[in-house]
Length: 66
Image (cartoon, rainbow, N blue to C red; front, side, top):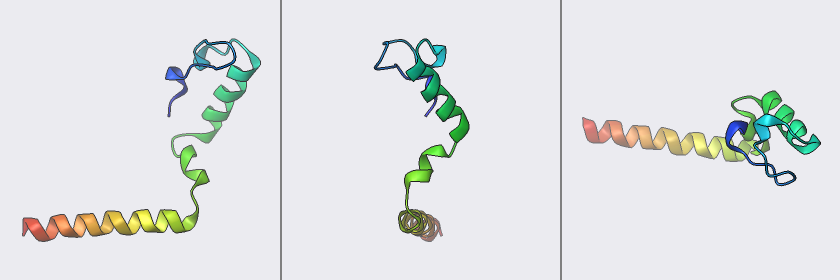
């Protein structure tokens, strides 16, 4: 998620402006996490299960296309 659309619950300003300490802290955290920062909270089993589902979906589509 990009921080340019987030609104701070503390000051009701866009987080990207960094008006209060809460905005600045969250903006810094989002910048450090990068694009795949949200995946850090998923456990490895969930990631493997997601990968298996994606592989099965691609295999099903390839089978139907043939």
